[in-house]
Length: 166
Image (cartoon, rainbow, N blue to C red; front, side, top):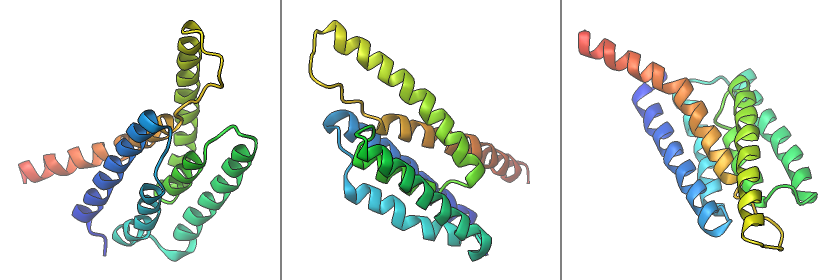
């Protein structure tokens, strides 16, 4: 049976983990493996609290995660994406429903493009010649937070309103 309160605890923990990932990527250009592992390993607990069926629910989540890993590992091999970014995006694929994950990818791409342009201009203005390192975990985390907010804040507000009036 779904446990709504615990779902929101888990979603809150995911939001905190995404903020930590963004800040560590800004600060060190690295997203720690322990953080990505924690995000990935708590996804099954979230599935359980939501009552997600093994078939097709969990199968879809795992399939999207495998596809995400395959594509982003290819980008990593081309040196277009960092290893921590690959792991973070794959771990997020375990949490976000497939339709919402497509929205996450679109928002992530737009934010990542803006971030890259801003950093490229800043890099050029400062006269730096070395390769530009974009903390793409910021775009991934921001898109993840956007999806969480757009999906779950309206439901939380509705529940709070119903609790206040009932």
